[in-house]
Amino acid sequence: MKTLTNIDKIAYLFLIIIFGLGIYYANTNLQYFDEVYTVEDGYVEGGSAIFLFISSMLLLYRFFKLFKHKDLFWKIGILAMAIVFFFGAGEEISWGQRIFNIESSEYFLENNAQGETNLHNMVVDGTKINKLIFSQLLTVVLVIYLIITPFLFRKYEWIKNLVNKFAVPIVQWHHTISFLAVTALLVFISSNRKWEIYELAFSVIFLLIFIKPLNKEIYTSR
Image (tube, rainbow, N blue to C red):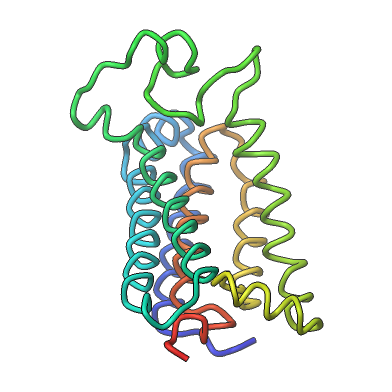
């Protein structure tokens, strides 16, 4: 494992504090955990949106900075990731609906589990999209990305060339370990609101991955 940077250390200390307080409140004052610590539009959820947005802006910055040095596939890859993380940031705060006090349309009032203007809480045939896509599918994607892909990247040259071609950042092992650690810590939180701090961890760790991936050369002009 490569040496942690100062940014890594600060970010992991931040997550330790967030999870430490979360576990404490969830086991001593569940009402406070649900209605204050992880409340909708609270600082935990807002933090997730901020870190996702920063990741998106960082990717866009690199897209424009290296535009003339990179081929089409690299541009498609990094732009797609920037859009995905911008979308995630918007969804996290329901696209500013509650911030700007915007009423949901009739469609979202009828088909969204929380009556909000976002997609991840939509209900289709009685099934929440959040449960189907943003939980089950995302879990599979994370396992492949965090555990399987790093091994393949190191072993097969053609996979290394492919992911580099599309500007896909490869995690360092401390990123994988941190994801596994925060996942394990969820066992100590019984509330369904625990997913809010998990999403915060997701947004922080992915920002660290974008800042300094194993294949950091994809963000250079070479």
